[in-house]
Length: 103
Image 1 (cartoon, rainbow, N blue to C red):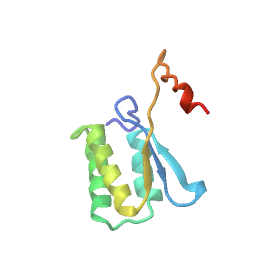
Image 2: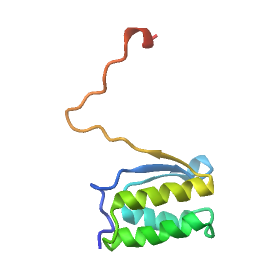
Image 3: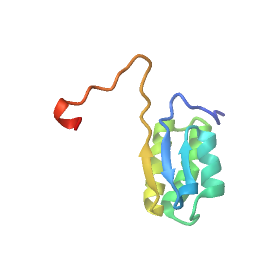
Protein backbone atom coordinates (compact mmCIF):
# COMPACT_ATOMS: atom_id res chain seq x y z
CA UNK A 1 0.00 0.00 0.00
CA UNK A 2 1.23 3.48 -0.84
CA UNK A 3 -0.70 5.89 1.37
CA UNK A 4 1.74 8.75 1.13
CA UNK A 5 2.83 8.50 -2.49
CA UNK A 6 3.49 12.03 -3.61
CA UNK A 7 5.94 11.83 -6.52
CA UNK A 8 3.35 10.40 -8.94
CA UNK A 9 0.44 12.47 -7.64
CA UNK A 10 0.05 16.02 -8.93
CA UNK A 11 -1.23 18.08 -5.98
CA UNK A 12 -4.77 19.43 -6.21
CA UNK A 13 -6.08 22.47 -4.36
CA UNK A 14 -9.73 22.26 -3.29
CA UNK A 15 -12.01 24.95 -1.89
CA UNK A 16 -14.68 23.28 0.21
CA UNK A 17 -16.71 26.45 0.77
CA UNK A 18 -15.39 28.76 3.44
CA UNK A 19 -11.89 30.30 3.41
CA UNK A 20 -10.95 28.04 6.33
CA UNK A 21 -11.85 25.01 4.23
CA UNK A 22 -9.13 25.15 1.60
CA UNK A 23 -7.14 21.94 1.22
CA UNK A 24 -4.21 20.84 -0.88
CA UNK A 25 -4.28 17.12 -1.55
CA UNK A 26 -0.69 15.97 -2.03
CA UNK A 27 -0.91 12.24 -1.33
CA UNK A 28 -3.36 9.38 -1.54
CA UNK A 29 -3.52 9.45 2.26
CA UNK A 30 -4.52 13.14 2.15
CA UNK A 31 -7.22 12.29 -0.38
CA UNK A 32 -8.58 9.38 1.66
CA UNK A 33 -8.80 11.55 4.79
CA UNK A 34 -10.51 14.36 2.89
CA UNK A 35 -13.03 12.08 1.18
CA UNK A 36 -13.96 10.26 4.39
CA UNK A 37 -13.88 13.13 6.89
CA UNK A 38 -14.28 16.52 5.22
CA UNK A 39 -16.21 15.96 1.99
CA UNK A 40 -19.46 17.98 2.07
CA UNK A 41 -21.66 15.27 0.50
CA UNK A 42 -21.42 11.50 0.75
CA UNK A 43 -24.13 10.33 -1.60
CA UNK A 44 -23.13 11.37 -5.11
CA UNK A 45 -22.21 8.81 -7.77
CA UNK A 46 -18.87 10.53 -8.50
CA UNK A 47 -18.10 10.73 -4.77
CA UNK A 48 -18.63 6.98 -4.37
CA UNK A 49 -16.51 6.37 -7.49
CA UNK A 50 -13.74 8.60 -6.06
CA UNK A 51 -13.71 6.70 -2.76
CA UNK A 52 -13.43 3.40 -4.65
CA UNK A 53 -10.74 4.86 -6.93
CA UNK A 54 -8.78 6.05 -3.89
CA UNK A 55 -8.82 2.52 -2.43
CA UNK A 56 -7.82 1.12 -5.82
CA UNK A 57 -4.93 3.61 -6.14
CA UNK A 58 -3.69 2.88 -2.61
CA UNK A 59 -3.71 -0.84 -3.37
CA UNK A 60 -1.97 -0.29 -6.72
CA UNK A 61 -4.87 -1.36 -8.96
CA UNK A 62 -5.01 2.02 -10.73
CA UNK A 63 -2.52 4.86 -11.10
CA UNK A 64 -2.59 7.97 -8.93
CA UNK A 65 -3.39 9.96 -12.10
CA UNK A 66 -6.49 7.84 -12.71
CA UNK A 67 -7.56 8.48 -9.13
CA UNK A 68 -6.93 12.21 -9.55
CA UNK A 69 -9.39 12.29 -12.47
CA UNK A 70 -12.02 10.58 -10.26
CA UNK A 71 -11.35 13.12 -7.49
CA UNK A 72 -11.80 16.01 -9.92
CA UNK A 73 -15.09 14.57 -11.18
CA UNK A 74 -16.31 14.21 -7.58
CA UNK A 75 -15.30 17.80 -6.84
CA UNK A 76 -17.21 18.99 -9.90
CA UNK A 77 -20.27 16.99 -8.82
CA UNK A 78 -20.13 18.59 -5.34
CA UNK A 79 -19.55 22.12 -6.68
CA UNK A 80 -16.05 22.25 -5.18
CA UNK A 81 -13.56 24.47 -6.97
CA UNK A 82 -10.40 22.54 -7.82
CA UNK A 83 -7.02 23.71 -9.04
CA UNK A 84 -4.15 21.52 -10.10
CA UNK A 85 -0.99 22.74 -8.41
CA UNK A 86 1.92 23.13 -10.83
CA UNK A 87 5.30 22.66 -9.23
CA UNK A 88 8.27 24.37 -10.84
CA UNK A 89 11.23 22.04 -11.17
CA UNK A 90 14.67 22.80 -9.79
CA UNK A 91 16.55 25.22 -12.01
CA UNK A 92 13.49 26.11 -14.09
CA UNK A 93 12.46 29.72 -14.57
CA UNK A 94 9.10 31.12 -15.54
CA UNK A 95 9.36 32.95 -18.86
CA UNK A 96 9.67 36.71 -18.62
CA UNK A 97 6.54 38.66 -19.45
CA UNK A 98 6.67 40.94 -22.43
CA UNK A 99 7.33 44.53 -21.41
CA UNK A 100 3.81 45.51 -22.51
CA UNK A 101 2.31 43.07 -19.96
CA UNK A 102 4.42 44.33 -17.06
CA UNK A 103 2.47 47.57 -16.77
